[in-house]
Image: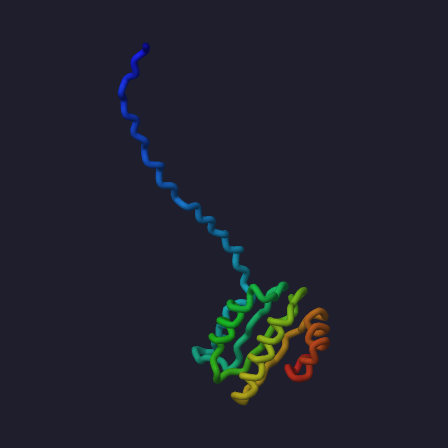
Length: 135
């Protein structure tokens, strides 16, 4: 009769696995508008500030645009250059509407610099062109 060796086999504990966490890469941020920078005349701050809208103004850029609006002084007239706008969505138009109403409430003017045809047609479609002073 064959003999068996009495050997004990110990099992190793399974290796601890690290959970994989996949982080989605954030889409590159596009600037919705240039930073509001007051023009100066002979060392004095002018009472007109200019904001320039990018060619694509969509909801992804709303936060940046809102921050740019908050940098505009409450005691200044505002020029908004919308000449390059090729695509704009409802959220940005609503944000612009709220900003224009805020400026007008502080007894200042908003001047539109050559708004593009696309910008005018979208604002007209929503009925905001007259309220915002877009011609």
